[in-house]
Amino acid sequence: MKKNKKIIALFIITSLLTGCPSKKSNNNDYYAKDTNAFNILISQYANNIEQIWGPKEVLIAGPKDYVQYEDNLQTRVHINFVSGVITIETLSDSPISNLKEAIVSTLLMSEPVDIIRRDKISRDLSQDPFLYNQVLDQEHQPIRWSGRANSFADYVLANNLKQRKSGSHQITYVEIKLVPNHINQRARKFLPLVSEASNRHLIDERLILAIMEVESAFNPYAVSRTDALGLMQVQQHTAGRDIFKLRGKSGEPSRKFLLDPRNNVDMGTAYLSLLKTKYLAGINNPTSLRYAMITSYNGGAGSVLSTFDKDRNKAIRIINSMTPQQVYQKLVTSHVSQESRNYLIKVSRILENR
Image 1 (spheres, rainbow, N blue to C red):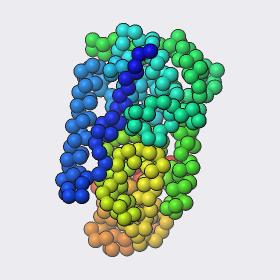
Image 2 (cartoon, rainbow, N blue to C red):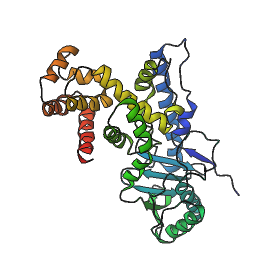
Image 3 (cartoon, rainbow, N blue to C red):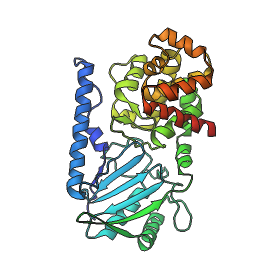
Image 4 (tube, rainbow, N blue to C red):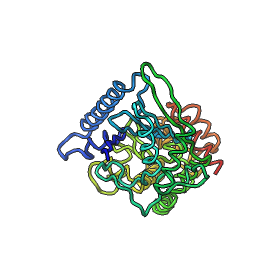
């Protein structure tokens, strides 16, 4: 049997960069060097993909997109966790065998625990696959074992095989749709972790889940171009460093640590608690405080307070003199960051519908 060479987009890149600076290094210098190194590695990886697939076909993992390359970059898997579509495509001259292998391995891939360990390739048979209940086969059954995965792969290849041209490349591919409620199916997987973090840090479960949905669509493999990691898109150098300092630890969490779902949910929730009890302390109305916390999670507490006044104490007094709806309107119309304005709208909308 041929050796299956897998390269997981961005996760190998993240594993190449170690977690914490030395005690002698300047933190600002470390942050700049670390971020620059990360960006250089992304560029190098993207260049390798472009050389093989062409300039219009560079596809790299993101917060809501899982991307895995196999067979020396000739075959790739893309899971879009928003649209709910798995696209598996290959440049191989033997597309059927390559696609089948990729379909089966994707359907059976494990729940992420330590997802950047490249030496752990065997599946823990005591756990359901990560996509269990998110994909149903031709008999409308969930896929847990290799027999059903192989049968479904054969069905897909017999009925949904497609081809497209991209420059000089002939790309053979299949698309598999996730179930309509795939976001809720993924959310259920992490409810125990959310409940645990909620009780530990006294943060509303609904708020944690809404932030997870906006940040990653419950994609535990999420890695952003700004090096935010995991379900709650925690950054080592900001939220991660703050929580470590609060816990009496030096430095910052490693990427390996933050890509573990349990650690990620705990750290993200701890940061929400830090916003609530320290950076935004003094805001009296719980709804106004929630709006400030949500916006701060995306753009920082300083930019939230400066939306009302440059002086922190005066900003708090102004917020307390306003109704929650007035606070919301001020943040979604006057906050310096368009991204943060949209973020508050998105998270609030999800909370209203829960």
